[in-house]
Image (cartoon, rainbow, N blue to C red):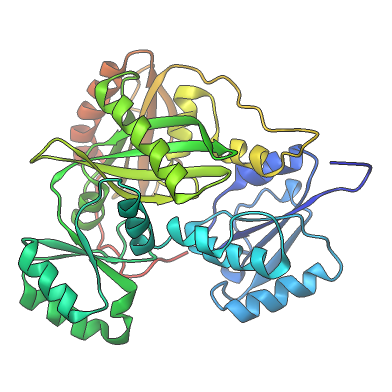
Length: 401
């Protein structure tokens, strides 16, 4: 930052998240603006760290967003544009291209948003992925289904989490589902179902290098939790274990080959039960959801939202420097709850460092020097959560803010 001119960052989010990003950007001396949707006008935004909030009915109409932000740019010099939620990544990339603001452009953003684009790119770079097929050409799909045994996963190309994913058990079932999708079917990708354990790697990237990555393993696969109404858990893997080292290596290859220059990533991998090999599932250029940021912070002291803000606001005069992380281990358990405001006070273990305070949700984060202790606590808590709190509702077909 040169002279007295203050730099401005525009944050875009269709969902209530990223508060620590905005607070840290303000602490770095930047002017912080937020563009969000009208139904979140009363959300818990860090208003003391925001210079202005702009509201639109929705953030999906490209021309409307272009017009609004271009109008703002007449009187405000926008130096950075950041999408805080996955569903806004492509819009932010298009805005950068339109206004010629530095950062990830439209082509690269597709590799971190479009499940077909990231699979094609990864496969072309020699990264192992489940066998897949675009839902475009019917002859190629028939060849794929005759070659790759069912079941298959039909996944929306640009959705997040497990929303919209369907398990397909036969060719007849697929054609029925595609008939229902109509003109929307090309927005899906068909993928081999690989039974196995699911892992995630959450990274900090600067100048195309992974400076930090936390490798974690989900309890039940997130898709099972979402569709079957189970209890969510994840925990950091023991450092220098074989799985941890293999995933560190594979994650670096994915980040490099998909072309991220700077920011944070949340990548998911599956370890196949049949062959014990890791397969790349997907990656997003954002902070992981489900309080993964808080879980990683409990072990390492690094808040991924805050680190991301430091990267986005770094300059030649003030480059980004990674703080040395702590070496604890952590894990989280979370569940929908029958009670409106569940009481977790009966959980008294000293390793508990965080308690969820959310309507009809129960959750705990635990931290320890011993990864085995984390696994022991989460295993015990899953049984107790089913008895004390657990509730489930059907997964929506579309995301809601």
